[in-house]
Length: 177
Length: 425
Image (cartoon, rainbow over all chains, first blue to last red):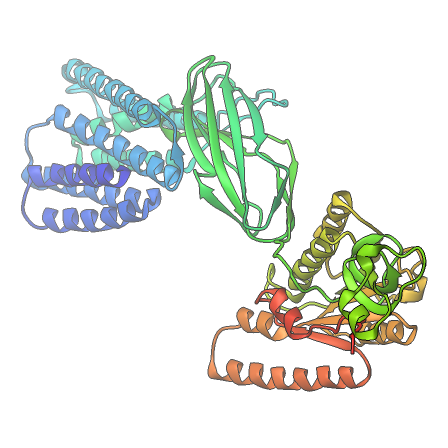
């Protein structure tokens, strides 16, 4: 069941770059992403699926560079959400393989994924709107200001990611598990 | 218990990094937007609250089973707060298989909710089955964080060797004083006819042998053999073993010893046990179901223990090895010390029967099949047959048993004569 869902999500993921530019070399990269991702889905390996997904993102970027379409934040947000759900599904599939599932487990997970995806799309919309609003203000500014803002952004993002990954919370453990 | 980030974080970070990098390099805002749901997912996976708690209860259907019988383990989980996803895994001891249900499960529980998780295990080898309690892993949102714990409540289930019915256990040459099922050479009350003698005052009329009386012309009565019990001491060789774990010659010998103990105790005999190996352990002869339990419990722990110390059977007290006892030795006869001990017992006047458990079948099952292995097994079997013949020539009563087929078949082939049978001529 989780394999089938992951396979469908992988097909959707590969369709994004092909929708931008259904020509070589995007098709080659998309094909490679499908092959690698397919192996990862079959083996329920998050690492291999990540590799395939990265190839799909590269193919999407290549398509954007070659075709030069107008910015489409809706499609991009959908691509990001697909990536999140694909990895989550493959990760869950690998964990529950051969295990008994209690009532409501899959429904609860689906609700979680839907919530995170909704939050992601909302955040993407906010950032897009913010960028649209800030664009005219930053237009015409000197290069050092842009570089400084970018460096600050990178620093903040790096610090935030580090804090996210290393954050731990202790709790008491007794006879209760 | 604390939350730990999982490898999924790295995957999301990798993809977010690729999207951001490509976005900066190509100058396309779409790629920056691609990274946003990934970063939001990372943020959503962060756990700041303490992991949830569960109350775990366990119920095991029985604490004593025989080989190939089932044990049902039921866990009851009760959540005090909402538990989005909890994973449970009960590690299986060796030679144990899940017969029904799963020993690995996922549950989602709301506050105050209680669920039951059950699975049935089949135990395929004698052992003390130790159930340590399940490992628990609480999963955070999207599987980005996990907290692990262990429910520790060790419980042991005794898995006794399988008992097969035995109709022809080796018959003892000497009996004891209590009532039993063995025909004693002594005359008295019983149902087995013995000699015929002239009638004497005090004889019961129902004992008059009318056929002999008519032939001989005077009153004759039939005498009967008493039915008495016997003392049986099972001597188990744990000096050496061969074969795959769970199917060694010691396992086969233990199975045979348990079967014989049950058979003799069912015939009202007193049964004792001596484990002759690296450790010298014994069970004093006794009778009844409690004695069978004692013997089975001792057999459960029988194993080969390496030691440089050689213990002699002379160390064993007389009450453990009574002089009139039938000694049934179960051994692969691989160790010269055991052969010597069995010979000593025979020389000391004990009634000794050696059940030679063949190591050929156990080793044959443990090695891959090949023509060379077949040839080696056949040669070994021939060599072993010659060795058993040599033991028989030295006065040992040896019963050859392959350890796989029913013990009764091997014992039937080596039936001993009855103690005494009177014939009217």
